[in-house]
Image (tube, one colour):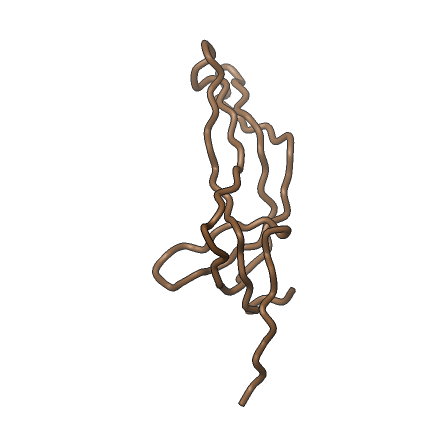
Length: 102
């Protein structure tokens, strides 16, 4: 896939916070979860990124840190000019053949 190529996406990723009962925000897990579109959406590939799942670690007086425990290779896809680009798993992308230049 090349940047600027037209693609169709079946789903995009949304980051969710998961809190263990009784532990509060001191141990908050952040995960990327798929949100499926009713029908595939056409967009333009504008970048490739790596996103991670993980949790917060309390460092005491030094503050808080994020500890990643899983990584995902994703594409950054822009569906229109009015909204921010979305993260899409590479498995959820399908390229659209170019029509050629006139």
